[in-house]
Length: 109
Image 1 (cartoon, rainbow, N blue to C red):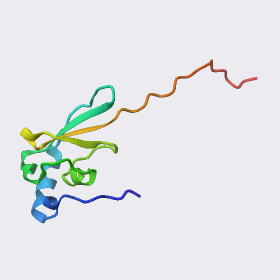
Image 2 (image 1 turned 120 degrees about the horizontal axis):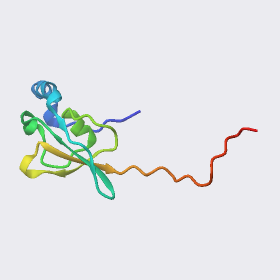
Image 3 (image 1 turned 30 degrees about the vertical axis):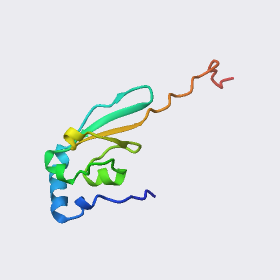
């Protein structure tokens, strides 16, 4: 069972929910990009949501309450001050599968 954390106070009222619902299909997700440690992506919210975005790092439940939808494991790690509606996310790069050693021999007689 997944326990949700707090949602943003700014998203609790009916007017905010109406704005979020009407903007969901205009949320833009970047392609993923990487460095040696992390996988990154940014999410661009419609400017109508700008007033609902706090000027701080958000918990997963908070950015999800703004209508952002992405797989588990992403962390909002940076506030892009010039454009607060651009959310910057990262997650640890997946570990490569273990290398196979030896040769494969089928179990046939």
